[in-house]
Image 1 (tube, one colour):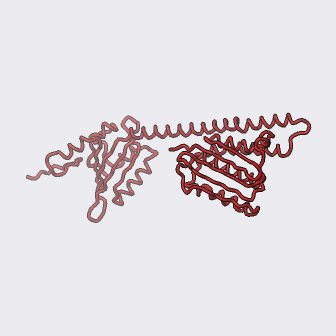
Image 2 (cartoon, helix red, strand yellow):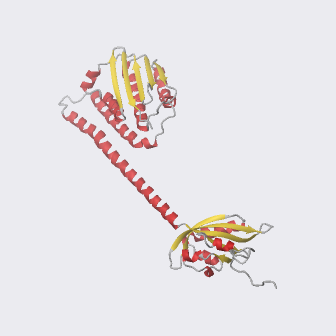
Image 3 (tube, helix red, strand yellow):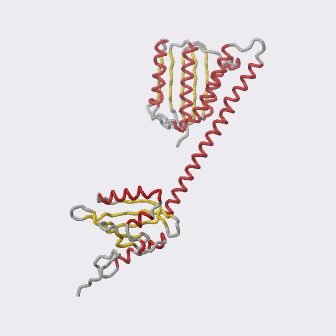
Length: 354
């Protein structure tokens, strides 16, 4: 006689030995099967009760599934799954599933869509996985990342406060004292201008230091100097000044962002001084890396020159001191030699190899 007993709520194929279902029910993944026409579960693995507290028999139709999805994810999850099932597309879904005691557990479902010869959906076979520990780890990482970001922003504010206090604040105190001690004659126009330039340079340094994280160091010395060369070319041509640019074709060791910014500001300041004060006809800018961790920048002109010590002592050499301080902050040294017919500015940087 034929066995007419229906084999309901089972994934067992016609092997007659129960091995297939035994294997499925011994895994951490929770298997299930749904008949698409009736929208009823034909099988739910017994592991579901340990995870969610619901017995396998309590999963009758897909409505039971939908009602046990967290309200925040329910509509999106259900609509997406129905759409993909109708299209015959295998898919995954993550959502919070309701437990029998009213709590929620994060799960992931992996669904394989069964179709007939005409491509119509006939059923679903899938697995449900407990991903609550994974979600806890993700949340912890997100909280740590948010805390790191908050700490970094706080540190940036503290750095900015310190830079303003130590740099700009100190300059202002010095200048106020100079004005108060100036007597009836007061300060000369060049002295006032030098003080204002010093404030500008300190502010520039503060901005550079706090924006260096967003700065991209050029890929080569040529890429670094190209915009500077373009910027000063018209000025030099108008003044009939010949400028010779000499530089290595590639970095042996590239500067970091702060060093790059400091050197850029130095070139700008030095060439501006040549235009304003030197009366030079020829300028040479040389950039070399004699060693992998050394950078040497020279700017030389054939102008009238000046007495470096006298200018520094007069209080008019604020620009020179500002350049020296800027280079010193990034591990460098600035030297200035000048005499009639020749002024040479040399900056040496110790590069930080990565």
